[in-house]
Image 1 (cartoon, rainbow, N blue to C red):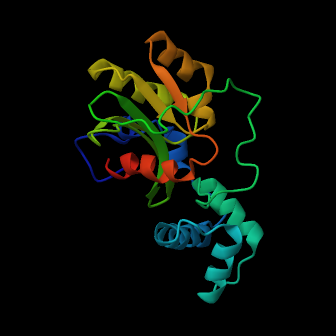
Image 2 (cartoon, helix red, strand yellow):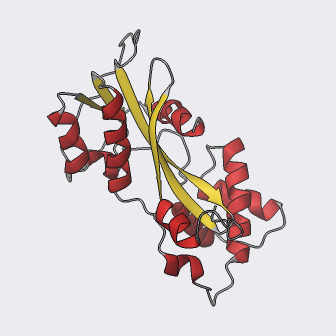
Length: 220
């Protein structure tokens, strides 16, 4: 994403806009990661077609393409990319004791007007030399993307920034997310509660909500 040929915006400013340390941009790794990046590109393209592929299926598919890989490498790369097969898993509804439990409020709810329900999701964007993470906030009724932010890390701050951008435009009655650590953090839930917004979180049986909410990140 950084364009060294751009004379209008210096490298330092481009790094600042991407929240990327200049030292990271100029760092020349001694280890050749080109093969891993090539594998990640293959994984990304296949996962887009078959999001139900987990580590074992993805490993088997890559082997059929002539790649001598093992499941340990593919698990590491898929974890780095934030990819997880979309299908109901055993014990999916186990509560996470590290955060407060919020109910799922959208069951049988007729969503018939703007600002009734907002949702948020995080995905990654493939770059020439790696990935950045994108969070987007969408109005569930209109499918309008209200705010988005990118980051080179999966910390909570870029999600809070996107939330603040959205709240400067309007305010929802309900905010629905998955139970990712960014959305269950005290900072994020506290900001919603401070605004009098009801919090809804996906739980058991909501596996396909993840697919639906991911629509917002594909629209950015």
